Amino acid sequence: MFSCKYDGYEEDSSSSKYGSFESWYFIFSSTDNEQDFRNADAFEKMMNLELEADMKTLTQCYRGREAATSKAEKLDTQTNDELLYDPGEDDANTEWVKKLQENSQGGETGSDETDAVLNCPGCMTLLCLNCQRHAKYKTQYRALFTFNCKVEDKPLHLPPGSDTSNLSKVTIEDSPSIHESDNSDIFHRVICEVCNTPVGLCDSAGVYHLFGVLASHS
Image 1 (cartoon, one colour):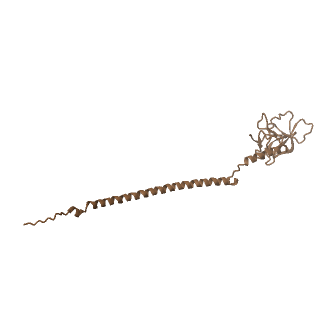
Image 2 (cartoon, rainbow, N blue to C red):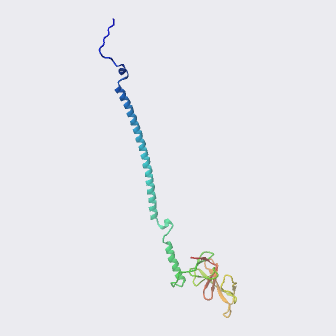
Image 3 (tube, rainbow, N blue to C red):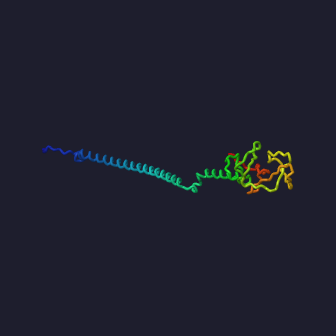
């Protein structure tokens, strides 16, 4: 009734419909490889970005150091006028003051030691580089040579018996006529020849007694 003819071969329906196992393995393997390639590309890009950032930072640091070095070298080569400073000025001023001290002693080489440097209180003009401070009255100085001091011709006198140790406190009177027989100490007023500020007295022996001055002590 029924004829059944079997040729010994059965078609694998699953293989014909869905493909073989090797085909699916190749597909999945290809997908994984593509994903790996994408990950590798992303990682490489990320590393390149980090490298570029590091190189940029290092370049900026190097340029900053170069700029600082160049600036330092430029400062080293600047002139004294550009720096507003002369490193040899102090030594030059010292030599200049020594020469002034020698000249203030009549051109003779003398000691450069002094109790103070005296200046005019009105205009700060230099008055004396070689002076001796009074042992008791600390604001009074005695000197033989001065600068910028003018001795007035009009004589002054102290009454006999006056204490001449502190000339800044005694009363000195004008004397229109002083005779050699007068028993009084004769003085002449000393003023700054720049601003005419009274700065002391000069006695008959030519010694300057300066008390209205600004003193700078070393």
